[in-house]
Image: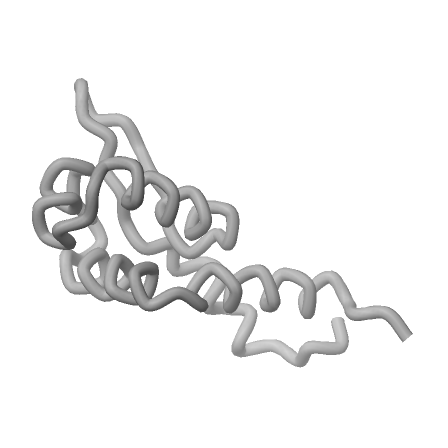
Length: 93
């Protein structure tokens, strides 16, 4: 038996939150509201180096936990709420 597409998606989602720094980033972004925050403010709030923050943001984006958008010259990051709907449906689909 093979995992379903939904199970694969959930595994990627959970893997993206498997690191304590990514959990910290998630909490900071969640607490910032729907608008999120620009990269520089996120870096300041987390205290992570640019390289470390970029690495973890990439992992989180791969897991669809966050999304980014360009506003002027800044990249803003926010929590992506869409994957949370996977928890409302059975895993067999």
